[in-house]
Image (tube, rainbow, N blue to C red; front, side, top):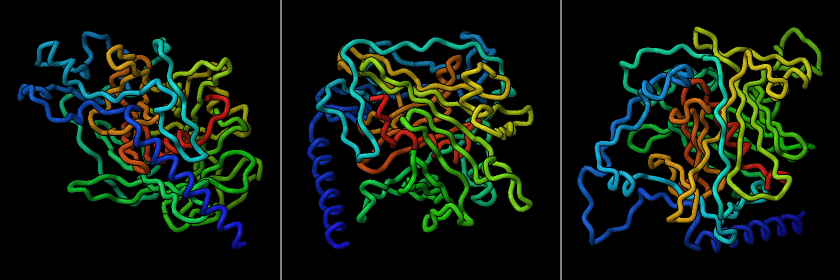
Length: 395
């Protein structure tokens, strides 16, 4: 046992050394809003922009002229381009970030990115009047209920995920902790997740107790499970699997979300392409319950069968190719500061300015995760966990 522990510790140390060496190399995704001092004075109005928030997603029926969420710049075009905060995805293979064995990086090409065609959808949400400014969210009620409740409309929940890789086996099986950010640097613990060691496919258990990540624990609230290739992930609550049959003291299992990563069969390199499937919302802003009795009734199968009645289809926002920096860029509004192939924003094709969720790196083992209506904390956390997992068919 001592020899095995020594080997695990050596492997973890080697992995950390390689990661530090790679991260010392310049390049990767750098946020342009973190600027070095320059002899050229910038206008004091450089960051003045008006943002009009609304209840989306997603006011699908709105046309472009009436979109209240569009950015209205009060600068000249030259100043707007110079001061627009963006995060860049560098195409150089050698400059990509190196992750642990659960996360294989994807390189990006020297040509443009793949376009995402808009999909006509019927509105699934009630459009509320835009008289209330968006505010930052806080916990309401107990944590167990809060993490499952859809976000309130016109509320942005800013969270942070930390990855703990200390210990003999956490280099391969880290623990992830989700906290809700508060004022003055304070934070409130919400969820913890860890990959199960003895499982045929990637399987993450999610709990409201950071010290108890067991399937039978009282704080177990859900799990994330992948297919064999690691290209499709499904998020469940803590209900009973339909294979186990009904019992008096349990309730059937709900599907809360699904994530599909596009496969890379031909070897073309580029930013990851994600499809996120959520249950639809009722007129009372409650989530539609999805109780599949077998795999053919799940969210992924509904999407494949084009049965869109009770589901919402979202995608990651396509980065824009920047010829000057020879890289892909995304605007995270200062919430992401480091390079990572994991950085993404989730939107609806018909309303790409309403960011339902965004996720990105701010330090070696620290990531920000923000979400809005109609997501809940458990859905967003599980989607973020899926980005850490290796995806052999996507790389």
